[in-house]
Length: 581
Image (cartoon, rainbow, N blue to C red; front, side, top):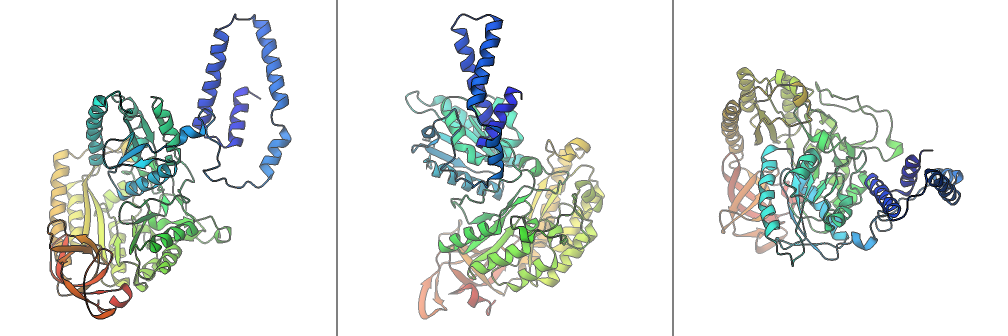
């Protein structure tokens, strides 16, 4: 067996990561080289004879073939992170934070926010402290696949570089790190561009952060952007820093031609249902009244950890929709998870994002309709209103199939609130294609929308096979037209709520007025209402003021494209509100 192959196989049996094995080999080679260079070089014959004897002695004292057979056949218990061996070139105490301070900033999508919470949970467990100012040792940022967020990060990095340069030598050096999608996608450019970044960790490498930070302490750059086929951080309880979101799956298999996610976050893999329920129960015990189930393609959830459910039942797709991959079978699906999560706490609202339109079988729609605590709000990303553009995007549906699904959802869930994503100026989009997208906005009348001008990303199918041929000024003009039409139609849709009484979960004071409170209704629209005394339906005669986390009934008096306004009627519970809304 080749010596390198032997070392790598032993490394796998001990559970060391690939970076650890390479560094360990490098260290051993450096030590061997330094010891040889400090002595008289023996003859080639004596070198060969000595090497043979050394190899034989190490072979005699090393693991036997029976050892590997025994290790392979014996059931292996999964060791917790506390008892795992450290990388062989680092001492255990070097992986500890020792109360060093970390400052975190997050940019981009909701998955990046959740990633921050996971990363901070891991660092906190290793002994790091979090700070709200820049007097810290490490600094991490979250990347995002959208160009605006990436440009914001580049600008921020230049500010931090100046801060790093001005830092007095008497103080602990400032280390800068980037985590998430941007770290994986632009790894080489980030590490080489002005040498300002010390730590780089991809979405599947947060468990490695203590090691990466230990390496950075020595003045070296440290990176791990390897993607995983099974990492879900199922055993990591995120440290909640925002309205609660529970990650249920990671990655995406859809391979839409414009999207970078499959290349930065890897293939789809789902958390076990049991671990998700445990996290939701803990959030409920903490008093949280709302949780969002989070994933790149959240409703394609499939838990294959329970063998008895890995049957041959095929996936049910929305009518008229197809996939870019071979049909998957078996596992516990999203409808099962949604059912179980909604039973944890009847007073806890359940949302989910971001779904794909193809994964809305009737059992999911029926469940949303039946359960009071599953919000009657569905994000239904269309991306375009042109069947020709949708085909180029590899979305797996036509305009006609999408519109049919919209009608079916509205029939199945009366009063449902719909939101969507749209891209203006995708490769090859003509003026006629754009007009069809405008008409789809008018036809559906979304309550909320997220609209962007197309920005081509490296690695995507569009980058390799399509031409970004729509001029930038045309993209921006079309985007402005889409935004204008969306606002007009959203205002019409939201005005239908005027005169209705809606259940609102209070979030706190309005940002624009100290005398108003704000919260969100079932459809996830912001509702503004005066901070006034009200009756508590569970305590007749008691007058109270609403607090964050309270459910209140609000009668809507006016509406815009983004906000509802009204006056508060009473404090209530989710269960009791169903009779009044």
